[in-house]
Length: 85
Image (cartoon, rainbow, N blue to C red; front, side):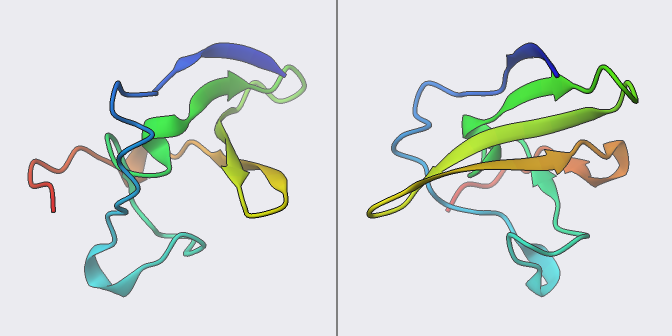
C-alpha cells in the first residue's frame, strides 16, 4: 500500500452527516462516495502496489475501539453534492 493524499476537510471532526439518497447506507455496495460528507471527509487515498487499484481508508473511532476501514475507489460512485443538511 502506498499513501497518495488526504480528502480530509477542515471541519471533518464536526461533520458526521452522511449522504445516502435512494435509501443507501454506509455498507451499501452502491452507496455514493460523497466528497465532503462523512466518512469521505476524513479519508486518505491509497493505492495497492500489487494491483495498482485505488482505495479510500479511514479510521472509525468507536466507544472502546478503533477500526481501520477501506473502500475501493470507484469513479462511477463519486459525487459532490451541493446541499448540506
